[in-house]
Length: 239
Image (tube, rainbow, N blue to C red; front, side, top):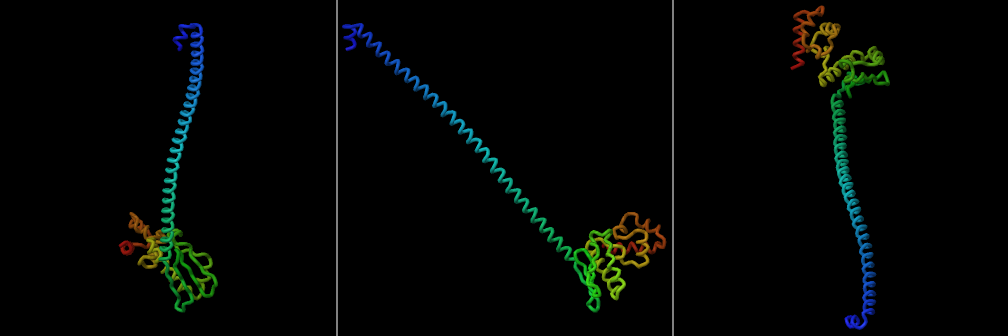
């Protein structure tokens, strides 16, 4: 039909073709616009997908950090609990060690009591309502037995001799248990002990020091026989 029209009326055919071409151009432009719009949406979708992946990657990194932090916190809590349990156990053992030094000596009538407990010597004397305690032996200089002035009343009382003997016995026990013997704890005559203390030698550790025999020689009243006696007493305790 179009061919017939082309032959019969070339002008009408040309107009018809122009109209057809115009419609095709319109459709082409519309398709291009739709394509451009789709490309824009595709770019937006790609951008959104990229941003979504970035958010996901960041979330994964944060989760990994959180997991690592929680694991580390769990380990710290575990180690802290272990350290606390160890400290508590050591405190219990220390308390048991102190209590393990506990000992009691009573006077013949059972009224006056001298005790060793928790690194101290305690005196319960019936004529007094208070108890007199020594300084902690583990903190006293050279493990001396040191009391406050209240001891004077006890030393002037009826139980003075018993108390002095009990104090010496219990203090010697503590020092033996804790390897801090003093000169008075050794098997030595009183006069030898006094001369050593007057010369500033108060402990077994000092008698075991290098050059002690030469130092003893310089002490007035201590000769070779006494030095031998002292060294024998030191060797006995060191064995």
